[in-house]
Image (cartoon, rainbow, N blue to C red):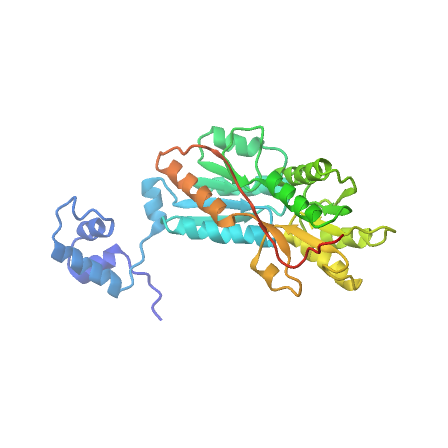
Length: 338
C-alpha cells in the first residue's frame, strides 16, 4: 500500500502547473497574483481528488503562529470540568484553532509543569482553571503578553482576567432555599478549601445561616471528589444528631454523599434532604432527581473563548472580570418540614 502523503510538488506534476502557482492558490493568494479562476479550479479539483492535506507544521513555521490555544483544568474526571473542556473546544474549533488540553490533577507542581510544556509548544493563548494558591507562573505569562484568562477559579487580588459564576450568590440562594423549607440543622460539605469558588460558597452558606437566624451550621470536607463526599457523609451519620439537610459544594461530592446514604438505607428526601452546587444532565435521571445550583457553563466557555480570540485579533475586551448569575433548579431532593 502506498502511504505517500501527497504534497505541493506532486500536485504541480499532476496538474502540469508550477509549484509556485499551486502554492499561491492553496495558500489563498490567487487573487493577489491574478491567477485565473480556471487555474484555481483545476488546482482545487486536483487537491480534492488526491486528498491533499496542508502541512500545518510548515505553515506555522512560516507564520510564527501555532494556531493552538492551551486549556488546563484541575481534573477531567470531574463532570463539571469535562463539560467546560467540551464547550470551549467546540468554540475554539469554529475559528480554525485547535486546543491542547492539560489536566493538573489538583496539583500545583503538575500545573507548573504543564504550563512549561505548553509554552514550549508555542501556544498563542491560555485558558486555565488554576488549582493552586500561588499565581506567580500565571502572572508572569500575563505580564509577558500571553493572551490568557482564568475560568471558574481565579485570583481576586490580581488584575488577571477571569470569567466565573457568582459563587457567593449561588451558595446563599441554595442555603436560603433549604431554610425556607424548614431546615435549620444543615451541613455543608466543601471542596478544595483554598480555591476561590469554595471560599465564596462557604461564605455564602455562612451568611445565609447567620442572616436568617439559623445557627445550627456545620462545615466539613476538603476536596471536590466522590471520596470526600462519601467519607464525610459516613462521619456525619456516626453522630447522635444528624442534619436534616446536606449542601454539597459540587456534584461529585453529592455522588459520594448519595452512595453513603444509600448504604445506610437513608432516603432522600424523606430522611435527609440534599442540595448540590453544579448541575449535570444525570442529576435529572437519578432515582431522586437532585435540586442544584446550576452554573452557566456554556456562557462561561463562550466568553472565555471570545476573550482569547479577541486578544489574538488585537482587540481588548472590557470588562476583564466577569461574574455570571447562577440558577436554582428545584427537583425532588429537598423536603419541606415543619
